[in-house]
Length: 163
Length: 435
Image 1 (tube, rainbow over the protein chains, first blue to last red):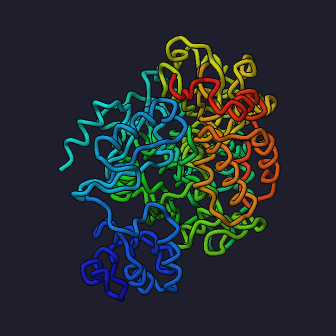
Image 2 (cartoon, rainbow over the protein chains, first blue to last red):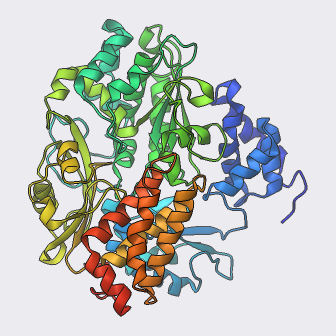
Image 3 (cartoon, rainbow over the protein chains, first blue to last red):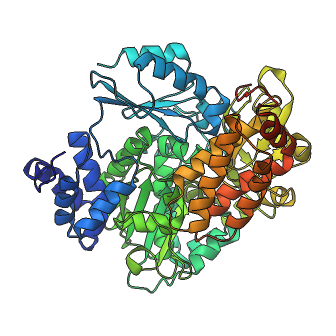
């Protein structure tokens, strides 16, 4: 991981940053920290400390504040992830409807345990907490999209269709 | 789409008052069924204090789980303050709860109208929606609704030709359960980590960037257009007199028809489980119900016999209606393993600020992980009774209590399963979680 300033391509991101800024009252630039980090992640897949410095400088907050946010919010990836992120819920409603079975099935299919990335860099597999989809459990989220009322066959189809 | 079942659609419902179609979430569809008429009425004929008075008269209480009277919360705010903020809490994350997501996906304009009415009542120029970072379709639907509303002159300056102006900013969370706590949400919205704040001062006095701030849940605010349109007294007449209104009850777990059901408060719990939701999977007997999201104390089948879905009934039974998310558990389920699903969650989500919660959630989870792994000891069950007592009431925010209550209630009501698992190093129920 590079850690010098400018790791994030501030020029390329600048336009998106500026667009975000127009959505917030001008005196609230500190509020931009998390959404700016999210923009970086959308662009690059993960966020480095150097990216957080760029974000902090843009938002006008101490660099430590952006580093703090980066290390505290679990949706921000501090390490590179696969081209796709597969999140399988393991909380109570999904557990009652078979998430243990699905987690084992995904692990077997992908050949990696939760937290791991396939050797070809295609998929990062995560076991996550409640996705607020308990009425259609069990559920997984692949990149942005929710897949509900899952069974093994649906998991196979969804994972198989990932480029 | 989230789990709306084919329940009857009633025109008098607060939420499920129309048939869901591919475009029923749009501005045109919302207006065709009377949407934004309450806002128009308020801007033409009501003063801000009149809107607040209707909400107070409605008896509406917070739907995020705390059940606090909304009119009281609004009354604490000094409306003459140069700046007042409104934050809509859309950080839905209480396990067993999936109602706000339905509102965002299917009636985003009703939420926007509710936010605007609250903003009018509270003298708010800038409102914020803090939405769960994982939400995708809810986010897209909300953003699209706001674009439509801006283009139609419903959000921004001079709303509907009046002198009222309000902007609504959508802010995505970063995947932290604790950010659903209102002061944690405010810290997160200020670009910090989501540590809860000490109270007092309450947000109504000193909140977002130090200004008076109201934080209301999505479902709470989505009630407001109905209340303003038909009057607080009409809302107060719905359901249970002491805890009135309609709620979007979510039911999950071992039932045949899980999903969301709009029901008046006071509705019999057994009727929801055994009639609306079709009873228990495989016709098994009911074992237990977690009545209002994973934090609320579990109830045995015997305890729910006469319960109704309102705060007083649940309180009398020693639990809470919480967020209205019922988790139904069939006979034959291993309560020890099921509890460890929850201790793992609370341990993960404890923000670490308060020692009793940070350490206590880890201790409880370590012990249960050991028991479930067949390495339990006789003293473990006594520890599981003692540790949550040390967390309860000893933390800044409600997450400590939320983590303690499931452990206390599971071990109290299903103690024999815990004793058996620890002593015999195996589950009394064959490790089963699925029905």
